[in-house]
Image (cartoon, rainbow, N blue to C red; front, side, top):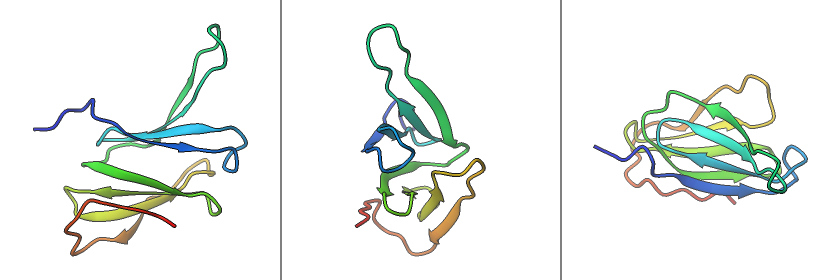
Length: 105
C-alpha cells in the first residue's frame, strides 16, 4: 500500500503558459498549481492527467511544453503536451523499464 499524500513536485517557469506554476504528481494524477499572490488570492488548482496507476518522477521539457513521468506499476514512461485543452497521453517507453528515475534535458 502507498500513501496518496506523497507528492512529487516540479516548478515550471513562465516559458510555458505565461505564469510560473507547480506540477505535482500524487501517484494517481498530475495537477497544475498556479500559486495565488498575497493572502487574499487563492491558488488555481487544475488536473492535467487523471486515472494514473502510480505516477512518479515528474519532469518537463520546457521548450516543447511536454510533461514526462514514470509509472512504476505499468513500468512505463509517458508524456503529454501541457498547453492543449485536451492532452493525450503518449507512451514513450512501455516495456522493460526497471528503474523509476527520470530526467529530461
